[in-house]
Image (cartoon, rainbow, N blue to C red; front, top):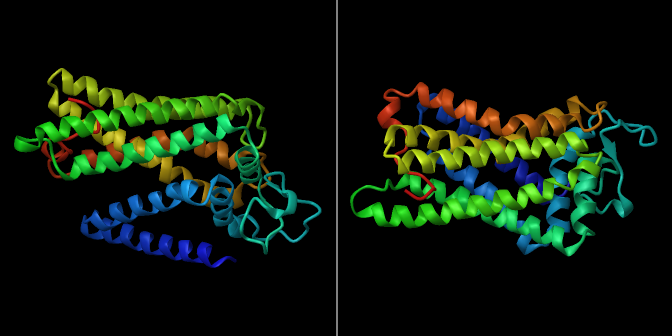
Length: 289
């Protein structure tokens, strides 16, 4: 197993520890900061090392669990596959990899320039929106912060708009990618985009109408959709991959369809159980007011 993959596993263990700490003490600063940091490590890697190498690192994270109990490389479960020269993963000790990962690497390491450009745009703009949303949450747009809040809000909303548009254009090609689930994956990514962008739009419309309480509620839901689409998607895939190896594209389809809405549900569950849900909900938004 490559050293950098082992280090990433260690970071995930530490992050899980911060999650437990947050659940016990209601202190989420460390968990949130590390989640943002790990997101940036994964996403910036696409620009630093190139899409092919970044995807190979990402796939290697899933190789360990997906290969547990797989001894016969000539009769792989339908959700596993091999790739030429084993180039789709940096984990050279494994010959088989999740089929979605093999397709992911092939489509972008050797795909057309336009497709690669869309992936860069999706990653860059959604990363900006994700980070700016947390900056807004940390510094409410009240008093002297109002102008800054509006400026960052416009940048954040513009970023999530462009990032979602790039995602939709990428998803429009997925009908022919059986390793992702074909048409079901295409429709699932459309659904994910609708959930994320729909929540973002609602934070705008409620703020512009003067419904500050509603604006706060939708900010929670938007943040839940973002965390769901990025982190819950990846964690679910990590767990479901080895459990659904005999169902072609089963694990990734579950993640595509349910990660974003489940993120909204979790955020709503957390919001309604705070001591004072109305005033405790963040008073800021990554969208223009």
